[in-house]
Amino acid sequence: MTPSRAEKINQVLSKRQSGLTVVMENVHDPHNIYAVMRTCDAVGIQDIYVLNTELPREGYFGIKSSSSANKWLTIHQFDNVQSCFSALREKYDLIYTTYLGETSKSVYEIDFTQRVALVFGNEHKGVSYEAQALSDGNFIIPQVGMIPSLNISVACAVAIYEAFRQRKQAGMYDELAKPHPDNDSIKAIWASFSAV
Amino acid sequence: MTPSRAEKINQVLSKRQSGLTVVMENVHDPHNIYAVMRTCDAVGIQDIYVLNTELPREGYFGIKSSSSANKWLTIHQFDNVQSCFSALREKYDLIYTTYLGETSKSVYEIDFTQRVALVFGNEHKGVSYEAQALSDGNFIIPQVGMIPSLNISVACAVAIYEAFRQRKQAGMYDELAKPHPDNDSIKAIWASFSAV
Image (cartoon, rainbow over all chains, first blue to last red; front, side, top):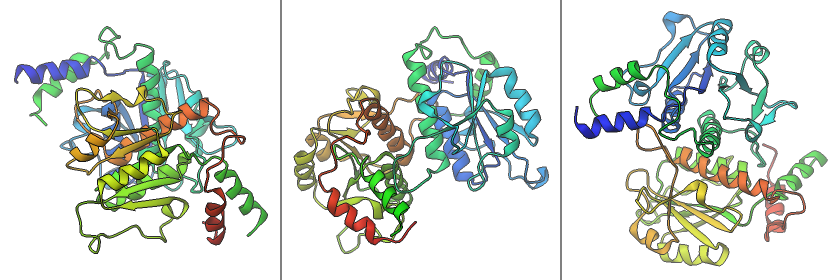
């Protein structure tokens, strides 16, 4: 590994946010999944949760380990809502689901300096009732247009960049920020990849 | 037209932002173009500029008028950078191009309460030198990941939702905000469409 490559890895790793994650529940379109992963990498999200309750595990297409976006992420896969949320509760203080309900708060009202998990649902059906019931509330991306919904990759990008903005302002991307607890193992995995 | 439809149109129109626009220069992928348009509608951008200097006009696939996103927008099409920028200068105080240069400012440093045009370039080549030379500067979406670039539809969404956030905070989406100057003609066009 070249010195500049090692420096890049250290720099990126120093900004990984252990207190921020995205959960995709039954998101089926691979383009959406990879677009979400790419944006997660861009804002420094290391851990993402892929929850797939609908397809039998053997039929699930899975996440290709060779893809360029997800090789830099730690992907936690679940086929059961409760076990996924139990795992989330260990690492995050607040879990919000996307849902266009009357009691939903705006994404701009969320305090992203806390440890937050954002759950995005299936392209057509949205987040399941079970996941909603286990969450701390719903949030929406405010919209003022004629067309009532945004693509999941766009909605996710808007939400996690708002998290980025708030965390950046709070100094949570500074070099001295608390490192990701799995720093050493992530670094070892990254170092094993060839350059992108 | 039903009363609820008329009310929806009035409500959306009351939030259209005459001082905010997106310019797409030689963006060729229709998926990207329509994704950008959809997000423009969502944040209340009415006017967008489609600048296409590369293909002969007869070969240009054009913008389908029947598409669900662009029917709610006013699309200004140009095949020449200078005439496009002359038109922009009449309506916007600041024109920024996306470019990953050393002098680029962060999107979060832009004052979106001013009248701002954001120029996005071709998926591979970026914004042309000619457009950059005619702009007031470059901006970037900050990124801290291993993968160096975001899809144009994601980058645009992050940028114009930051504009939305700032303008919302400044009261520019309130009902009493200054109406779009073309309100009446836009309303007539919208009223002619069937419900989406």
